[in-house]
Image (cartoon, rainbow, N blue to C red; front, side, top):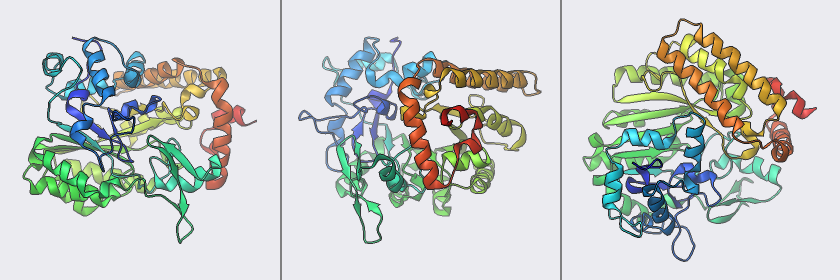
Length: 438
């Protein structure tokens, strides 16, 4: 089998927050952001273009040919780097998930890389409406970023895969744009409803899917089509909102997998995922743990985004989750017995790869101390092994690249501007970074 094999380019289609189609969300870290483009160079957009035609975009055909030949495409570099760091990449996870083999890929692919297969797995992001403005995100992911972004970047707009997004002031004096309203297109809904009988898995992420009305409508359409019992729903959600109606709809689906975005306890969570309150996070985690106990088809795991801001907090949070939280079902599966980590690749300035050598050495000492604590604990061997592997993988990821020379000034300026606007101080939550701000 090809060492680069991944089933996604054959069975999966992904939609960006602005409706542009892409090969996979992991490809967002590459210069072309994994965008599926038409022959004229413009992106396929789910709000106005054929999603069937998009699966045979030139770039995606090239990726399939590279995979068959065992070559890493640029769009697949994130998985390559994470695997080289000792992490379980999305590529490896998808191979485990799907009954679609390398041989299936070869047999279903034409010489030019095109295919004629139904899409079984969709990544849908219904705009960028979100109630948080997380430090590692930006205006493409959350409309709550607009004001802070303009203050930082000093431009009334931002770049996205479809070019420059111009922000205007509405009658309430807030910045707005219509560029993320693609999911209101009836053309899209007609297309996706025609595909419902082929759908086996849907992944939904931010914006914040649980506060977007179209997300609820989509669930209802799956149920009305009699397809819900055959569909797996997967979320990346900040769990600030758990609508009663959505919780009721979930019980009718084959399986619901919830990735709860929690990046630390107390002030750490509140700093990185502003303006969330830790009490809200904790209350909803407890509720989700109870829901999982009552509904075996619903499963929850914590996803911790490892950034330059919260990397030092990671082992403490892992210990809290394992020892002090009291959760019975969250991360209860053998494969994910601790938490799931996602290291920030971009923005480069908030990645741990921005750390200078002195701070890297601090993090290594800190992690090694915690590794010894985990190994000497009474936790079971599987949990010990997983905990150690997580910490080592973050260190390996950090050491793959040194961005300190080019990114530290950007990190310092970005942090100072956003801290001032939000009345926060990075040194209150991560004093280990003090030397960068002297």
